[in-house]
Length: 282
Image (tube, rainbow, N blue to C red; front, side, top):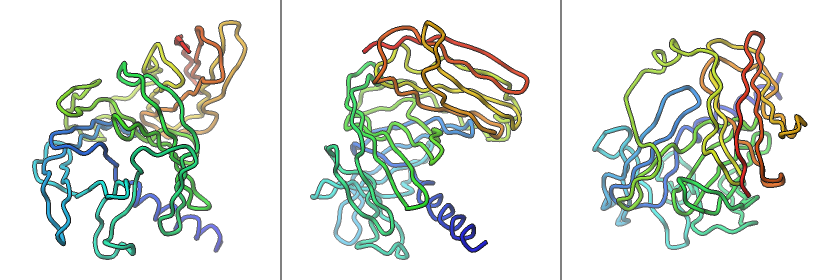
């Protein structure tokens, strides 16, 4: 029982930290729009580039269309992006490190009980732009989280310890240029959930290079099997094989070790089945 309680405590603490989205690069007017696992969408915008706290200059970002900043962030001289927390956060200047600019494979740093490591880098097309994806692992010992970052667009996605995507970047505005889908409509999560049905959506992007995101919705908790097959019908990956709660869910399919071609992905539940095709180009 004590071990279980400790595990739950770690989940609560890590969940508190992960409730905050992370942003880069920092420039006044930059915008990020994320699709979230619960079916909602989140928008953030750099609304102030000259917030001074303790003689230190920060950028302030607002959530949704709030023109008042809710948090402040900056790029330090040591190339670490940080977000300033309140006085209870037990690190120097109460600044939590969330990414390292121009991070390289194998780079690692420590923050409290968590260890951060760049565990993989890979080429990927994002918003029709060839970029280098960087997989950042956050390890709390019993719980791990993974993030995909790029220097050009910032954080692309977050994956929990089950490999499920918690949110991913749908669109952004960087230095005045619009990428992807930046549409944002304020809706309640309850309204979204009530309209859900069993559905398997087209992967995004498609065609894709290296990795793509598969999204599905289920209106009630159900056992879900999401598999990927090659054109010969041979199974190449199992992305989901578990009981999943109602909602909109996304997972990442990484194909960097496969050959170019058409692949089929299949969603099965207790009462629903659907298949779709996607094109992988190396």
